[in-house]
Image 1 (cartoon, rainbow, N blue to C red):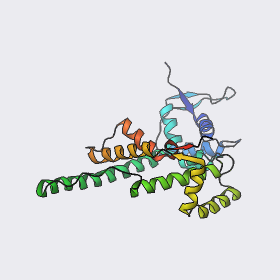
Image 2 (spheres, rainbow, N blue to C red; image 1 turned 120 degrees about the horizontal axis):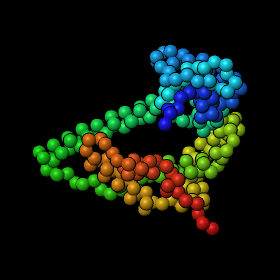
Image 3 (cartoon, rainbow, N blue to C red; image 1 turned 90 degrees about the vertical axis):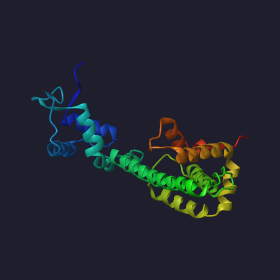
Length: 242
């Protein structure tokens, strides 16, 4: 099967579509693409017409190089130009790599602490096992408070419309002051939602066990799904039924 290839014009069109950029003329974007191609010494794999009406053939680049240009080299440039607020929150490969590096660094610190504890056990005897989490544990209270605030913000500030408008930002600032009161947030939350405490405690205990007992720093798919689940309040908050 013939490999797909893309001219500079076609790469610009793909970037415009993917990042939802409102522009009629892609000349400026095409210039940025050409600069990347020259700087990174990206070689064409074929020649083709950019449009059916084009007079001459243009250099065409592989799909992998097209993706590298848009998702790596020009990611920040395209994200800033986007007209979609959701797209502006996309993370680049470099940002994900930074998150992974930070997670691995934290893991190594935890591994060092665990190794020291094992050495201390060998020298001085066993320490008490970590107690299971309860709804009164500081870790649990802190996470529940975070989820309550995120649920309330999501309820009182619609995800539709311009999230960066003066009206929305003013409302968010006002709500931040209101939600400073734990009594107010818990009262509002209890009227609207139920918190799945038992499920959260099971998942949090399991997460702690995995973090303490994993060797080598390599987590599997199920572990990453669990960590992701714990980070999202929607997994533990449900609307009250009338």
